[in-house]
Amino acid sequence: MIIKGDLNALESKMEHRLWPIPKTKWSFYQEWNDVLFLHYNVNKRALMRYVPKSLELDNFDGNYWVSIVAFDMKNIRPRQLPAVPLVSDFREVNIRTYVRRGGKQGVYFLKINADNALSCLIAKTISGLPYRHAKMNRSKNSFYVKSQSSSLSIDYTVKNTILNTTALDRWLTERYALFMKENNRTFRFDIHHEPWKLKHLEFIQISIDQPEFCSLINRPPVLSHYAEGIKVLAWNKVLEVSNYS
Image (cartoon, rainbow, N blue to C red):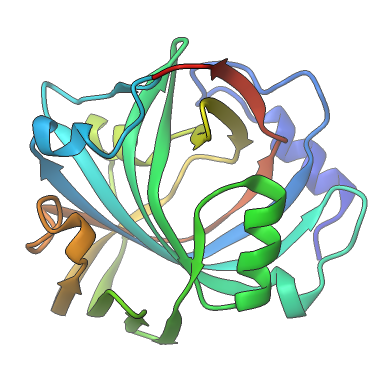
């Protein structure tokens, strides 16, 4: 059980951030557990067609990246309400890339799948993020996803030792803003959590069929991570820019 003191302590841990958390109160609490990160070095020109012009593609030493992130969402709830397992717990897989705007580094979702149709509807209605339903199955060392147009199948092992993270590891995972396009407007969600405690992820078998992003992720990842989980605070979206082409 998360108590108020735990959340106050979480809000106070900001030395790892590049900018302060918003002055307003956070709006949602959630937990991201048993997280798989699959990272792909991609061609900038191939990536540009998926990202709105209002956002700048971010890069690390001139290299551009797309990541698949698969995890168990737990206990998502509004600030003043309890979690409801029927809609608060589900599995999620998102495909994201790395962007920046106004001096803030963040992520932009190319696709989000979740295995709870009701949760998808609620999340998409409240946030506007591109949630779509997909069938998922997970065991201790496997994660499978199947929708009408795509699939993902992973069998893996995890090394128990916490990584001494590199600058690239942190660049790919320590992201405290989410950007979203809605009609002719770009919004930002601020989030906050403690630094990731990453472990090395090794694949026994991996199969990825994502036709809409075949130019980006049609091969095994070049880098991967695992994390047991983190507690996350999120704020309501704020308008960044409107009326762009």
